[in-house]
Image 1 (tube, rainbow, N blue to C red):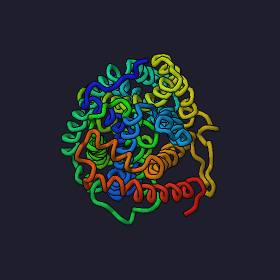
Image 2: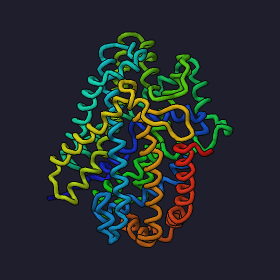
Image 3: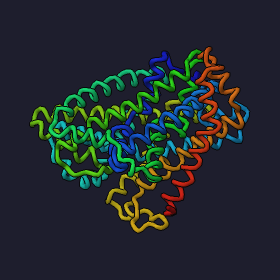
Image 4: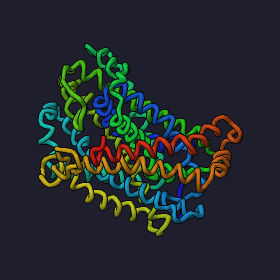
Length: 456
């Protein structure tokens, strides 16, 4: 079977950036900033993105391009089959993330319908809304259907074409909303909270959340960039591509904060972040614009939020699909729909965990904690805050100790003749050998014991 590839460098950049830009930037990032003390969290996030994540992005892309294989098969192709457990962790993690991500995307799609109907009061009934499981599962199924439809059409005709439409549309709307948000009363208070750091807020919890957010939003540790890297040619400049992916992700996350915090402070709504921040705050803002204007702006906002979500769900679905196509020669269309169905089924407990079912709502109580957490939060903790940093840590160990930095440099130089001997090469090698494993390993261990066992 013909494996497929991106038709253009622009298509690859937009698709890879699209996988990074998603609900993690617009839905999750602002309330992580809010819970992390504003700018203190933002600084930690930027540090992790550029110091830790960038070298790992480069490494994953290089592994994928070198092997032309999926996240699991790549290690076998390189002659290190026993290391394919890294890819298995990544694929498993991606499936877990997509299972709850699809549910949240279903919430967003439902809000598109509510905004089109001018039902701004939905923000006052968010808990009832998410507990209407039958309706939410219909929305989530529709969202997964569109995701699977795009992925089933292949790399160039499906993923690349969708990215070329979705990403520019999303960016245009974000910029328009920022311009409007900055004209609101008290917008400057939101900007101050967002951009002026309170360094007393920085602690292990904030650092762990910032690291998890960086890995989540950049799609690291789940095999996505290995998979996408396998679809590009040898002339692709991996360093430039990794830089554009990082800058796009960080840029959109940063811009999302310039929208949300002026809205929050101008509305006078007290919010410390949380799962429903954009679902509870934004409809009230749109309602204040007037019936017609609010309906139009609200509908467009949640449509484009859906665009952001689907750019990520596409890449998350492509990872296990690529594995089945490469390793078991399963036809792409068949594997897409089977995997999509399985992930939808896995996501049902997350939908039930917002109050509908007591077992999943109070799923587990961590050691040393008094309050239980729901199933969706548990899956987020396991995948986002545990397996993603673990996967990134293992990638650095593999590249530095098994594949060796000389092979990494040789692969990167195929699309960048000036790379070998450059300052960038020294930085990448030093980071992969020392900085990334040391910081990632330390924060992973400390965060794991802090989160799951209550160790301070």
